[in-house]
Every structure is written in structure tokens, then in C-alpha cells.
Image (cartoon, rainbow, N blue to C red; front, side, top):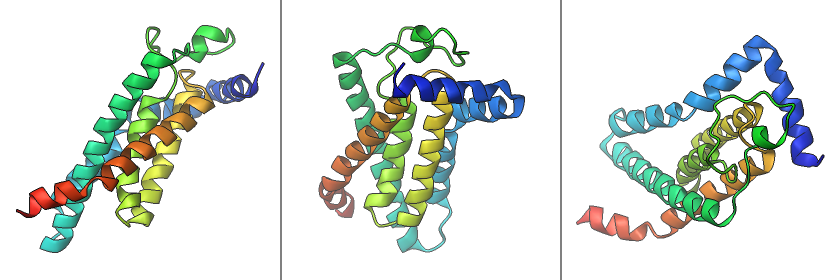
Amino acid sequence: MGFDANIIIWLNHLTDWPLVRSVALWMSVYGLLLYVVVAIWCWYHPSNKQDRWQLQQTVVLAILGVMVTIVFEQIISGLFFRARPFAVIDTLTAYNVFVDSTSFPSLHTAMAAAFAGAWLWTGRQKTGGWLLLWALLIGLSRVMAGVHYPTDVIGGVASGLIASWLVWHQSHWLSDKLDD
């Protein structure tokens, strides 16, 4: 067995403990909801008009980054099919089973990393760092659930950060349109 298989088997067996399983499965399914809450809070909460405008621009960049990430995932998964770990490794307990989809890259992790990237690229490193940490925890939970290999998570983070960087790098056109 390779590096990926050994790590996923070890992490998957941690779900034998009920509390670990509950937290991991909750993160695996509902972890992305944090980004929705952050987006809504940033859109409506700041009382300072300038802060609100800047945060709204970041939210728009984050949403566009997630959209580009989804396109990336469709392209990558169309070019490289990788069977889900639970379909290959008999000793895994599988949760959140999606038999007909590819394992690489982890779309959940990629979308989370793209959202975090918007904060990183716009100079909000503290918030972006916390959001990226949450993305990594989502990826870890997906590995624990037996639906992704660790390298799928790494690929998801890379894909999401690249997509969000491309959106941020081309965002001058958005600023020009919104300033008019």
C-alpha cells in the first residue's frame, strides 16, 4: 500500500470512536456552511460604509473563485478519473458514499480553499488563514469519511487557491464595473 492508502486507513479507523465520527461526518457534510455565514455577515454587518464595500467586494471575489473552482474540478475530473478510496480499499468504512464520482480533486476542499483565497489575496491574511485552516479541516474530514485520499485534499487546496488567485488577479475589471 502507498502513502495515501496508509494515511486514509489510519484516519478512517479513528471514526471507530463515536465522538470523532460525529465531528468528522458533520464537518464533511456541513463544513461549507461556515463560508455562507461568513459571506452573509460580511455583506450586511459592518457599520462603516467603506468596510462594508470592501468586504462585499471580497465576498463577490470569493463566490467567483468558487465558481471557477467548480469549472476546474469538472475539467480535471473529466481528464483524470480516480476511484473513491472506499471502492478500492476493502478495510475502509465509507460514509457519504458517492460511487459514480471521481475522488480527485476534493471539490469540498477546493471550494473552501477558493473562498479562503479571496481573503488571502485581498490582504486579509488573518481571516483568510482561519478560513484556509477550516478548509483543511473539511479536507481532513473527507479523508476520515473514506471518500478522499490525502492527495485529493492537497489537489483541492491547490485548485481552489489557483482559481481564487486567477479571479483576484483579473478583478480589476470588476472594480472598474462596480465603480461606474
